Image (cartoon, rainbow, N blue to C red):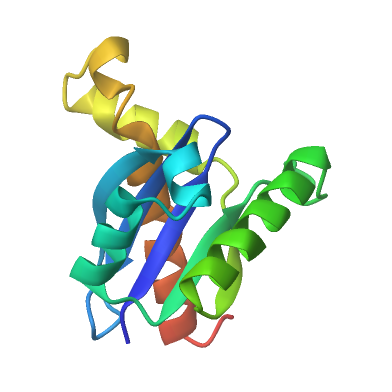
Length: 140
């Protein structure tokens, strides 16, 4: 089953997908949040290209694991997207995924400016990979 991960931000949404065997997560693209939330053609094209069977959305939590106002906003956006796509929805803890994505891109020599369009899709692939690994080892 192919899983599509969404890192939902206010301005952009990072997209990553798993392979059909659910072993490897790969970053795909970053789209403007309005296009994804509005089920616009660019997002529909990504759905057609990858044919996911499940949406996995990153849920921002505090370091103590609590959900705040941002998590509530992400939950609502994720539900809207899942309904529009007619796909089942699950959530994954995305704590520190953006910081890890920045660190990874910095190690590759990218400047802050060059990173801007990549962080969200890298973050989505990071929490998708962690979710896949936990699922495979029975930790979920």
